[in-house]
Length: 146
Image 1 (cartoon, rainbow, N blue to C red):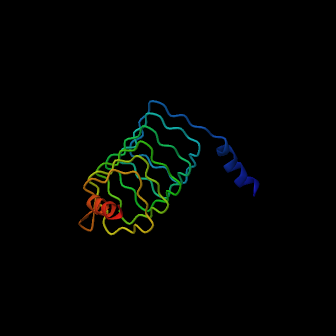
Image 2: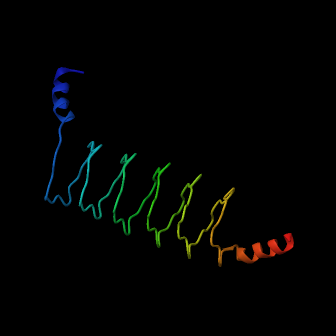
Image 3: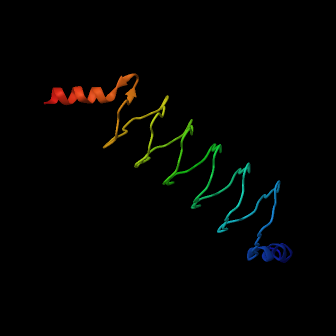
């Protein structure tokens, strides 16, 4: 690398910026490395994130009401204690996903590939697949099996 270019880039390598009690609405950040940054009590309301790498990022005590997630790669992600009420998932790949203790009442699954899906130890009162009451179907199966 030429000495001139190295002189321009080197000061930015260890540069740390601390912004406290400041307001930066309408700001734009492009080609910025914020890896390892910490955000506490920050408003990003109506912010746009495009072409952003958030691998290994942790979100805690976050409000994302009305947010839109499009073209996202979230492999091996965990959603723990997340309220997804009235959320919609469309054109999503969710292979090898585990739902543990979710409340999926009144949900609608439409045009889904549920191949090899396993449902265990779940409350299925009122669960219908293509209009068929699954609880009644299982009860009938258990009666015939006995």
